[in-house]
Length: 134
Ligand code: AMP
Ligand code: ZN
Picture 1 (cartoon, rainbow, N blue to C red):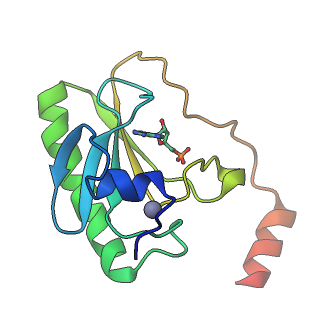
Picture 2 (picture 1 turned 90 degrees about the horizontal axis):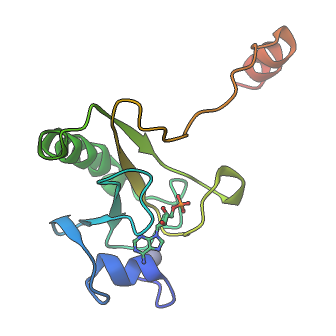
């Protein structure tokens, strides 16, 4: 299914021209318009799923295999030193475009890209609370 008001549906399906690094029957991989680093790319499924919660299992099975293939090839081409794979779900998690996508962010030594978070201690209370719910 496509969403006629979704920009990523249009990009993924070639209705809006974009910088395509890879395409197959299920996905298009494009350059992010606001890259965190040189080569920052997005994997877009051609069908519309708002986020990982909604992603079809068949597509979900393929997306990490594609991420592996892309970063393996791009690491050599870009000469980067590592990769972050980022995938945001929900506004609270920083998602701004509500069509599932996976960020492939090349990392270069001392590039200053800030993707970190402040590390806290796992409290006994939180641990027990979470484990009691599982
Ligand atoms: P997120 O915050 O995870 O939803 O990420 C959305 C990403 O989409 C951001 O990194 C944007 O820079 C990128 N983006 C938004 N519009 C476009 C566009 N037209 N072409 C390429 N990337 C885009
Ligand atoms: Zn869409």
